[in-house]
Length: 57
Image 1 (cartoon, rainbow, N blue to C red):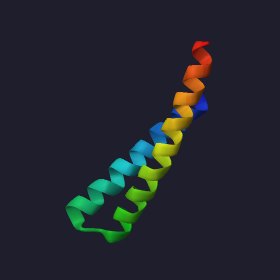
Image 2: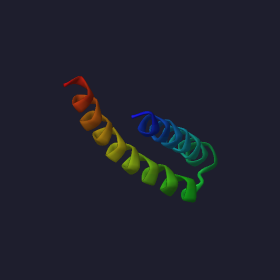
Image 3: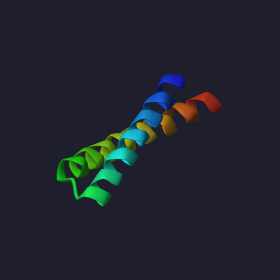
């Protein structure tokens, strides 16, 4: 679970950085990277939910 949390934190930082680059500098490549990170974050969040539920049992 710790590894999963570290992955989520890293993806959040990547998303935040790239989203800011897209917003401030109109960087299209950064926008694509931010969207990719957002999709990956969704997958990791679902995985976290599954692991978290198992840990509570």
